[in-house]
Length: 586
Ligand code: ASP
View 1: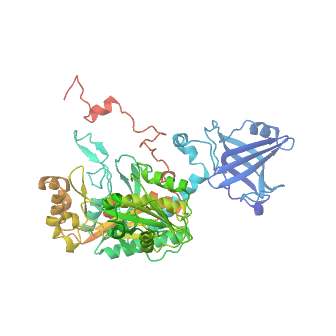
View 2 (view 1 turned 60 degrees about the vertical axis):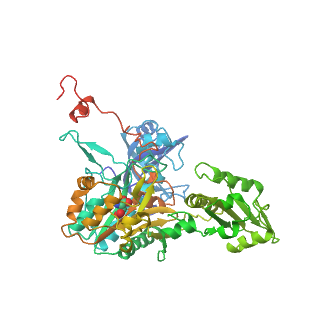
View 3 (view 1 turned 180 degrees about the vertical axis):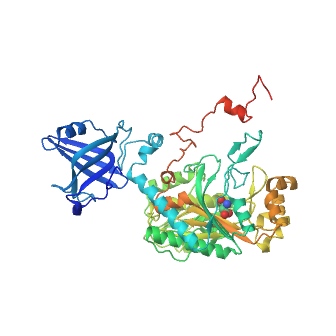
């Protein structure tokens, strides 16, 4: 072995031991006759000491040729430090060097390998292996490992088994585009990379493996939104002989277990909220419930008073920001600007200040009397000192816009503490959603999700009204996972594809294998998948998943380190049948 100890290991008890350490040079200080080298590895930093005159001349000479990130093997004796560093676990000791072996030299790194580095995002991506040497990223990788390990432990304890499913498959729709891989042996034909192992896990249920899980890579070719990765990892699970509540219980168990093991946090029973209620109260199917600020609908008390914006609106709805009646003109203008940003897209914002003296001041005083405003305030259970913010317009749009404002107010009022965790289940999602562009229904979850049995009859007459046995796990306003009870009956699956606009031939061609399997004793089943990268980021109290993936892609979907995607050789294209050889067309 090139070392007897790691760089994070030695303590005062080890004084006088002869040790060998290996690692990277963090920094060197050369002060007169004394040279200190900080040697770093994954486990920590240990200080090495050399002294001109006392240490061998050769050694001092070698030390003076070192630069940052050189890889060293250092041999010496553990001694007590004269000036100790209580901030470092190894801060009581240093190594009096007797031998120094340069295992490899290093160029000066393009950015500093420190907790707070001077490197920009792109540069750090390009030299990801250097960025990964930094503590914050190392901690992220360790956390990821720990969450993975604990997840496996829990699922194993519940009887789940880990089964791998293939990556070279045929399309599994999850609402994104497929990444495809051309086949050399079958020219003109393509594999698709899985958007999820959905159909395979269902086939495993048919095969009798009634509790399956996998920490699995999924691939989705989407227009990249901030913080989406074209490949990401899911905790993918499926269970047979269960109803929705069984799945919710099992995965609520996982959530609790992980919070306890990873964060030392006890999570109460998860509340359930229906999709309809979530949209009505929070304007979002992933409400951040670390704070209240529920929507209050005001149509009945605002319409018919001559204010056109309200009179023409499908929905008039507002929130109450407690204690914000003292917001200045400037602050209110800022909020109006916020909702007018194209990302939010509202026309404007109406405010009512419930002043400390009991009077009201609003932006619609021309249309509404003090008594009118008092009625509004009562609807909100508002008290003197509160601020009411109201929006109006088409129902769905207005809810979404007000949801943005609610989150913004939550932010401004410090109600979104990253160390507080409020998980919940959103249930009873609609089965379908109408797509204006394609002029047809799309599956809200995916086409394998079963309608609520009591709604099945509506599939022919009013498909938009059908609810599904589908559920999402939401934590702090982030969708962490989703799943559903599946269809396990050929006829119903066929019907579902019809509703989604597939011809019977198309459905048979793409999903015949699954529908056929349903004819060989498919048990009732359902499952869920949790976004693993996002879950880990959440445990670390961070929004972005990128630094929880060892080798992520940038915002444009590129790996700038290996430079991918990239063009491939003509030879390769020809071999794949993607380029015709003009001289020898086959
Ligand atoms: N396959 C689904 C997804 O990837 C999850 C599930 O329904 O289990 O979102």
